[in-house]
Image 1 (cartoon, each protein chain N blue to C red):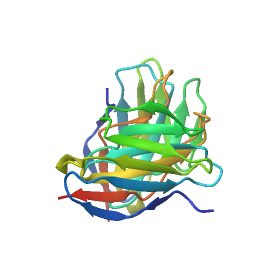
Image 2: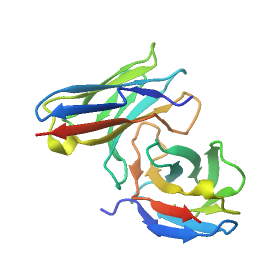
Image 3: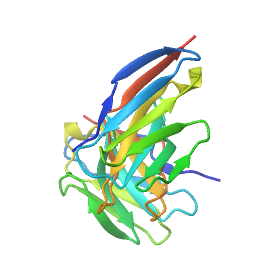
Image 4: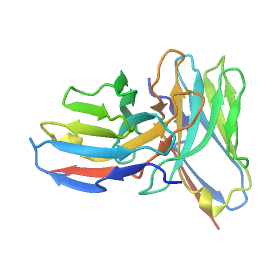
Length: 113
Length: 110
């Protein structure tokens, strides 16, 4: 049973550029959440998608946007990259049932230079 | 409103026990616990729900005090494989997002 798949695993971008990260949820899961994790810190919530709609958003600027497709996969887009956007970006999938845990992907390590 | 975990770090000898605490300033619907090893994805350990329901790995135990908005994770007879950073994640009653705590680094040595 495949878990959560994220691509790419590593990425180096220049300030001002745009980036798209991709996530395929665990089979059977319908909800995708995106997190940003800085080194040595806990994951910070970016947003959550269900039924192709953004359900809730964390304290991130509009430069961060997302999308969920009919097959439940998701993309995270970041525009006008800043050095401070360098982090591990984690995708977590779950069921819309809030009584279930999350399954995380291994993440995309984004470095902005 | 990030949950606060304690201790920040702990070192154990194999076989020893440990307790990791998670405290929130707001009313909670559920508490999650995850373990993350260096360079890897967080792995789900347990979820504790308002009302007493719990789901998770058999060898992991935890408690959830709804009135105090606190949860504790109990690691008994620790093994080398328990090493990693433990995060609690909390969810309020009206929201969908899971807010992660500050993390507790656990190292188990021989």
